[in-house]
Amino acid sequence: MGILSILLWTPAVGALLLALTPGQNTQVIRGIGNLFTTMVFILSCWLAYQYERHDAGVQFSEYFPLNPKFGSAYALGLDGLSMPMLVLATLLTSIAMLASLSINRRVKGYHICMLLLEFGMLGVFLAQDWAVFYIFWEVTLIPLFFLIDRWGGKRRHAASLNFVLYTMGGSVFMLISLIAVYEYVPEHVSLMSAMVHVSQNMPKDQQVWALLGFLIGFGVKMPIFPLHGWLPLAHVEAPSPVSILLSGILLKMGAYGLLRAVVMLPEAAQTLQPLLVFMALFGMIYGGLLAWRQSDLKAMVAYSSVSHMGIILLGIAALNEAGFTGAVLQMNAHGLIAGALFLLVGLLYERTHTRNIQDYSSLVQVMPRFAVFTSLTLLAAMGLPGSIGFVAELHALIGGFERWGSLMVFFSLSMLISAAYAIRTIGMLFTGPVKPHMQQIEDLRPSELIAAGILVAGIVVFGLLPAPLIELSTATLFQMNSVINPVH
Image (tube, rainbow, N blue to C red; front, top):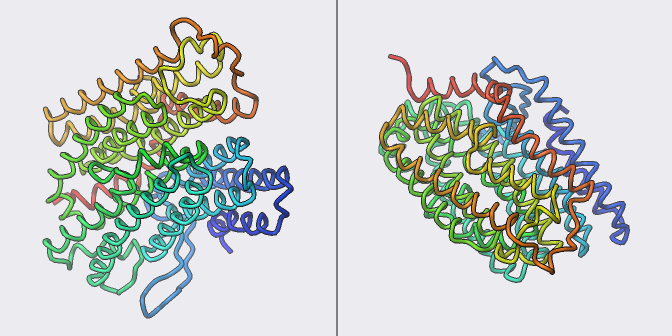
C-alpha cells in the first residue's frame, strides 16, 4: 500500500474504530477522532515537505485497474494543484475536531460523520481518475447531509435537504459532461492525464456544451451566482465546526474541479470566457452587497464566501498564469480566512447564544484575545496588505488586468464593498460602551486559542512570506497555462 492510500484510508479506519467504541465513552471517542485527524495532518505535511516543487507532473502515483472494460482505475497522485488543497483539508479537519467540544448530543455519530467527510474530501483531491473523483465527490454528500440534519440549528432539515438537492442536481450535469468527454478519449480510459487529449478529437460545439455541464456541476459547489441558493441556509444552520469544513474545503472542491475541466477543454474555455468573467464580477459585487446587509454574523460570512469565490472564478476565467496563481492562492486564503471566521463566530455564539451583530459592543474590553484574532481575520478578508488575502487578490487582479484591462474597475468596487462590511463588523463588535449582559463573557480557552492561533498564523505568515505556497503550484500552473495558451 502506497503512502497516498495510507493517507486516504486512515480517516475511514478511524471511523470504523469509532463504530466499535461504546457510545457512552465520549472522552475516548473525542480522543480517537482528534488522534486520527492529527495523524492525517502530520502525514500531509510530510508529503508537502517531500514534494518536488519543480516537477509539474503527478507525484507519489499509485495505479490499480478497477474495470479494464470501462477503463477506470484506482489512480491516486498529487500535483501542484492538489498538494496545497490536501494540506488545507487535513488542517481544517483537525481544527474542526478541536472545535467540536460543544457537541454533546450523539457524539459518536458526529465524529464518525466527520471522519467519513474527511475521507471523501481527501479522495477528491487525490484522485487522478475521473470515475474515482466522481465517486468521492458523491461520498462527501452523505456525512455532510447527516451533520447538518442531525446537529444543525432550527431549520436544519430544510438546510440539509436544500444542500443535497442542489448538489445532486449539479452532479447530474457533471456526470453527463464526463460521459460525453469520455467518448472522445483515444484509449477509452477515465484517467485525468488521458482526458487532456480530448480537445484534439472532440468537436468545438460539443466541448462548449460539456464545459457548461461542468460549470453547473462545479458551480453549485463553489457556489457561483446564480447557483448559490443552498449556501446561506446551510452555513447558518450547520454546526460551526461543520461550517469550517463547508466553507474552507467543500467550496474549494468545486473550484478545483472547474480548474481541471478548463484545462481539459481549453477551446471551450476560450469561447465561454466572457460568460465566466461576467459571472465572476457580478458574483463578487452581489455577494459583497448581500454580506453588507446582514445582521447575522454567520450569514454575513456565508455571503462574503460568494464574493470571495467570485475572485477564484475571475482568476480561472483570465486563462493565464497570473490568474491561475491568484485562483489557487485565493482557494488557500479563503480556506484559512473563512475557517477562522466561522470558528470565532461559533465560539462567540456558544457563549452568548446570539449571532445578531447589534447585540454586541466593546468586546475588546471583555475578550481581548478574541478581538485580536477576529480583527486580523476580518482585515485579511478585505485584502489588507500583509495578509494572504492581499497576495491572492493581487494575483487575480493582475491576471484579470492582463486580459481585460479597465474592466477590473468592478473588481475594485467589490474590494471597497468588502472593506465596508469588514470595518463595520469590527466597529460594531469591538467599540462603544460595554453592554451589561456582555460583561461576563469568557475569553478564548487554551484549546480554542490553539485552533484560532494556527489559522491566523497561517493567514499572516503566508501573507508576509507567500513564496513557499506559490512555488508549490508554479510548475503545474505553468504547464496548465501552456495547454490553454500554446506557443505557436
